[in-house]
Image (cartoon, rainbow, N blue to C red):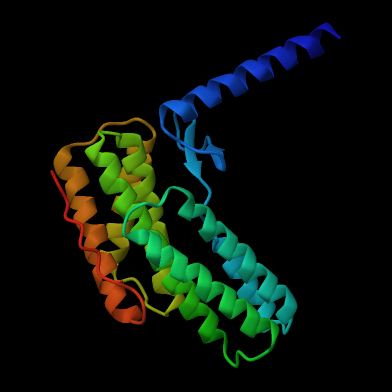
Length: 232
């Protein structure tokens, strides 16, 4: 009984500490704790629909159209979560992605999609929108000198870019794969509290910006060029 009471008290104190961290960083409800980044806790909003998109594709190929539609809608919900604190130019792209995913789910349910390529192209545009969202968040975090946040947002942007390229059948060249690996490494380093030089951060931000522009041209449709400039 005594041990249970001590455990309960410790749990409450832990929750209170997490709440204080959230308030200090200006975070809103709907966050999760990511303790895989090395040192301490990093608080971030859930916005990764990858598992849902992969499941939707598998289910479509298995002719389970109802399950595929349900997975697409779950993915759309993850994108909606990213809208919670999106107040920059990426907000419209995310809203468009939610609408496109809902339309795709309905069409899949009605069996009016005749090729899995339609799913892949929609998922790629969504991942592009998320990559842009994380890139702009990294820019804003850098202006606030929040290096851990810069690192996490850069890492997520690179991962969304890679997923989008794969979904439209673009194989990464050696130099592109190396650039994404560098961005991920730098992102994890910053998120873990390890410092990096301004030149290192600027170089990886330019790399992400260039990759966004290249992918935008391939995707076409509703994707728009990011007009934000990088500040040293």
